[in-house]
Amino acid sequence: MELSAWISIASICAVGAMSPGPSLAVVIRNTIAGGRLQGVLTGIGHALGVGIYALVAVFGMAVLLQRFPSAMRGIEVLGGLYLLWMGIQVFRHAGEGSMNPDKDSGHQGFVDGLAISGLNPKIAVFFLALLGPFIPPEASHLERVGVAGMALIIDGCWYVFVAIMLVQTGAADWLSKQGKWVDRLLSVLLIGVGVWLLV
Image 1 (cartoon, helix red, strand yellow):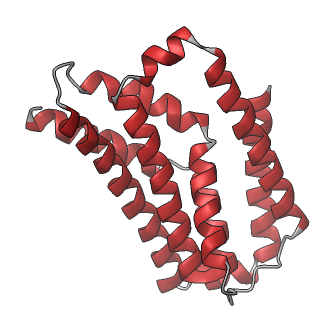
Image 2 (image 1 turned 45 degrees about the vertical axis):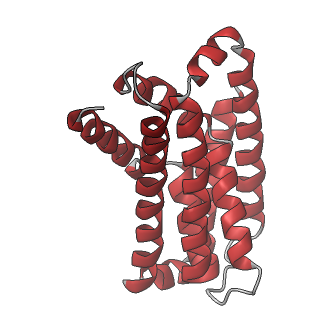
């Protein structure tokens, strides 16, 4: 693959990672609720999910979804239900985040990050629609794995950076003090996207 293709793919991955949505909301929420460790592990879990999607996309998942379009609808329904469940849980426990995480909070952050990326059909559509065209048919298996790895690293770096900056700048502490309203706003976002996916 030519250098220009790698630069284009890196740019696409960066724009995708930085665009606001449910993933950013979950990273912010987990950082506020559980501190730096939970936020960072949420970002790492999210990156792993993105890397899996990217790997599947570069090895021709688009062809499979063209043959079985109901598979994409299944991902949308699962994603919508998960976002609804998460939004309801955030609303029910609004303002309970403490910034004093227990020993299990990092594990929960990782699971939340992996789930929000794995069940977000927007990520699947993003990679299938935008990543595939930049990879030439003659690209080697190693180059395809490299593309997926690059997507994973860019996504992980962005969300880990967000979590660290929220803590370093004191924004997480300030948001924690406004916890009930922040949580309610995030829950509305999650529920809204979940409903949109279902209908």
